[in-house]
Length: 318
Image 1 (cartoon, helix red, strand yellow):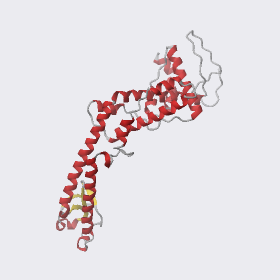
Image 2 (cartoon, one colour):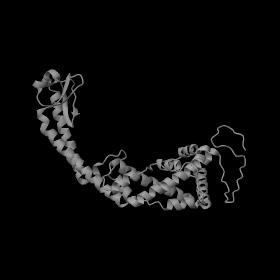
Image 3 (spheres, rainbow, N blue to C red):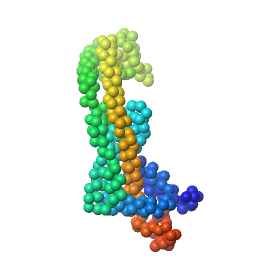
Image 4 (cartoon, rainbow, N blue to C red):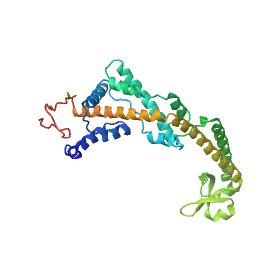
């Protein structure tokens, strides 16, 4: 198709309206890349799919595309040996969950209504419930690794909580001591460079003792790690490093499972993109009050009360 012709008929503006009806970035991207088709069979299939989606929306209202993300980049990184982060893995689990819910939704409608093309598409969605469950058993809704992601991680975090309580208890005793209170800018415990510290007035920095980790913008306060808790802070640092290594092991195991399912995951994304694209067309058809055209390959065009789709208000039909 001649790009100049597409520009003349404002085709790109139509695609922008179409894209706005997409529920996911996948469908929006596919809508923006749409080009006219010259195959009558393909055109009829596309129109039938849109008509089926129009029927579904008329019967059920909104279609459940929630949770579906573009996970192609994450799957590719898993394929080439990268370790996925918790957010990427959560997106994969949510996309699997979203695809499963969408499949169940459409198959239920297909039992009583003729939506053969949509049924065929969603039937090809792989569910991968085991992978979804594995990810969600380790990563919470905030993309944080949960304590029970591994036995070692659970143990390390318990030790961390115990160690942090000891440090806070020791510091709390110090800041309640009258002789120390007079040297403090505030009676509080804070953290600098992953070390527990207390805010000491600048004039007492030499007499207080300990390691200086930071100072306030004005210079009136220095944040000191008292000598009495250096050993405890060191222990916490060691536990933090162990925690990071254990989290990396969990992420590596989950990434390996994603790699094993990579081909099917990518296939799922393509199907979900197509389904969202089809329902975006149905949404635009509803907005425009469009009707299903009868197509032919004999060069006949008959428009009844044709209106430019971009003119608002009540344009005079041709």
